[in-house]
Image (cartoon, rainbow, N blue to C red; front, top):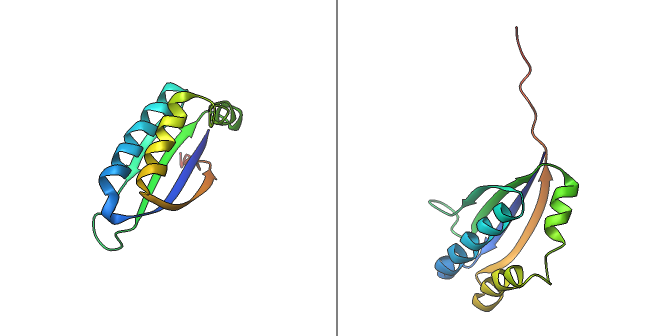
Length: 105
C-alpha cells in the first residue's frame, strides 16, 4: 500500500471552495480504487494549511488513477473548482508507506 499525503497552503477566505474541491476529490479517489482518509482543515493555529491523505494498493494502482488527470471530464471539473476559485495557493505531494507493528509475543 502507498499513501499520498498532500500538504496544501490555502486561501483561508476561500475555505468553502476548498471544501467543495475536497469533497469532489474524495469521490474521485474512491471511484478509481483508492481509499480516501479525508481532508484535514484548519481548526486552530495557522489558518492557511490543510492536508489530504489517500491510499492505493500499489504505486501502479495510483499511476492508473493519475492517468485520468487532464483528460477525464470529472477530473478536469474537479480541478476547475480549485483553479477558478483560487482556494489552493500551492501544494506538495509526498508518498508514504505504513510501518506495521511488530508482534511482542
